[in-house]
Length: 460
Ligand code: UD1
Ligand code: CA
Image 1: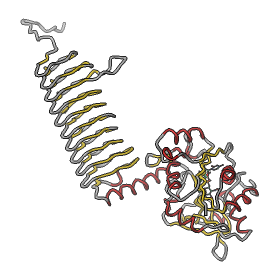
Image 2: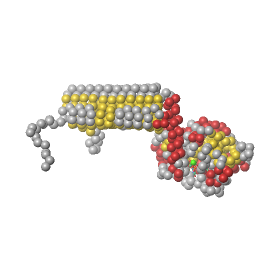
Image 3: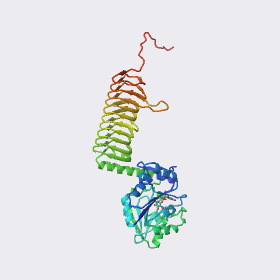
Image 4: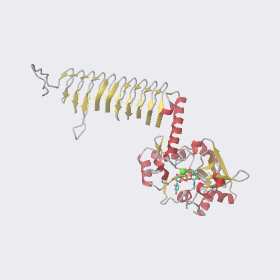
């Protein structure tokens, strides 16, 4: 049977108290809607329609400008719901685009639903059968209650604001996820009204319509409450984030990673790890990160879009972004590696050293207080404390090239464009603005003068 998927994502998310459309709030570094789109795309389907309205342009742009799941394979079919008149009305906007036997309705704000659960749900539905995902919860407040008949079958969904006191006590609620036969869904949607407390066209009303026509509703109740948990406010988002992060931490530990505290690591993207990797507390990984065998990451580091090869240590408080780090390097504490940093093996980058577009050869060291931007550094170079590369003249960026075995004395300034050839030596405190030939000593500072019989200014 042909399946198409309709994702409801037009609502504002009033209770988020945010100007960002709700489905763009991030969980594990990705917009809520990206999680739902990923789950949808993993199902065997013949079309995905996303209904957008509130902040529609921003939602589209976000998915068209970032490499979210649809970047490569063409986006979902974006459907506009100009006015948010309810979930039933939202589905109705998508129906003219739907050409399928079954329609799976997903909520853009229920991000952690598992593809396996959805597959099981699809298998329960049919041309004359609805499948509904429900959950048992201790906190049914605000959600649609599942009303079952004496024989235990689902008869209706009653929204909180329309429920009587007895219905409010029902602890089984609607997840917002259901699979419906397309042909009959169209007829039911045509008959919806907004005669309810919220004056909205409720999708949930089709359940009672279906029952009135003897169309069975098969409910699948799930046990993991978080899986079908919606995001309606910041507290729910935070709870889901923790749940998601704990799942990631468990996966890492199952793969042999030593996490000092699984509750204090955040993975906002994908992290691949070798053997014997150790990660200390409060480390945030973003984008795509890979850690080779034996890599150790100290506490309080942020690592984004980086590859770190075997045996390297990253010490506390270090920030790494867009860098490729070779094997057996020592980075930090409190170093900042910015995009375009490429370190060969055995490189040392110490405290308060900032690198950007810096290619640094094997065995070279910059141990303290440096800025190295737009540079190429050879092997076994020693860059002293306080060395600054002046790569910017106020208009353009310029490059600095440093050969092998060069020694740059402390507190030197290298004014780019400039080249320090192999085996050259720069005296401490020099300002170097022209090429230093191989093997030469460059002294770029005024001579020291000592003045005799000098008197300190005295206090009057
Ligand atoms: C809905 C269900 C409720 C269920 C709950 C689970 C209805 C009437 N109620 O309630 O039974 O327990 O989800 O989370 O369906 N949306 C649109 N257009 C609209 C209105 C909503 O696209 O006009 C989207 C929202 O962006 C959201 C989803 O539909 O992604 C659910 O809407 P929301 O307003 O959050 O519904 P709930 O009140 O949570
Ligand atoms: Ca909701």
